[in-house]
Image (cartoon, rainbow, N blue to C red; front, top):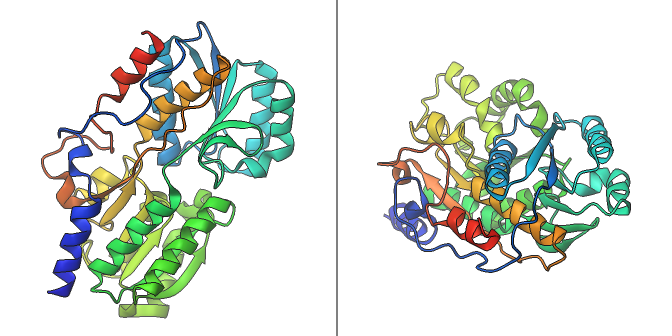
Length: 348
């Protein structure tokens, strides 16, 4: 009874089922005014790793918004490595674009290279470039677009506590390459332990290497923790792309423990393949990736036009199998009129 009551309370407070595809949604809560479109601009998107569903989703949103505002977009894939991202920054500088989007990697990692971008006077905006959200992020970044990472972690941890009857045994997956990933994982740990759960293990493994690492890791964790391992929490959906086969090989049903929840994601791979079917991932705390792509274009237009950033912060949603019932889309995309709102600001 306690578990059911907690879970119902959690759903009431955090699942935005009306924000999912096919449902109505409250009006867009972002900016309503700003500069008209700067005409004929070319921008470069520096993607941390296009194999990451979140980064790919944001890139798609940027391309969609750029088509509306009338800009040209060039995408350079950092391919999941520090060296490739450093080379990508150099390539972007050589193109002399009107603006640059840092998409999905820590700006501190490329501090020296990005100083060259700032010195060249090229406006920069970012998605998930560090812990400071919003205007005037470190490193000369005009605006860092993200949901509140601590809010995302809180929603995921609270789900695990409710689903585990207040006593889940949790393994946390993170990647110390990214400062924000460590902060998110620390918040997960804090809330789980404060709520009476147990963190069985903190696993630091690179997101870029999940395809080779997660299978063996999962097998080892099953051997170490057995039935005590009731829930997995990760800072990104990508970890669960490669966990399911190892669980299946161990004879574990896709809806059984350990149940998986992602503190940040909503990538297309997670929603249709796992959450909608109830196979090896129960929930994700999704960001509106496509909307954030539009926001990045709007923030860059403000920077190019010499106006202040909007300060808008998007809200995440806890997405469950129940919340996907009756919906058709494969990504968390609020049907709240954000496309029309931004187009109106730009005069398009």
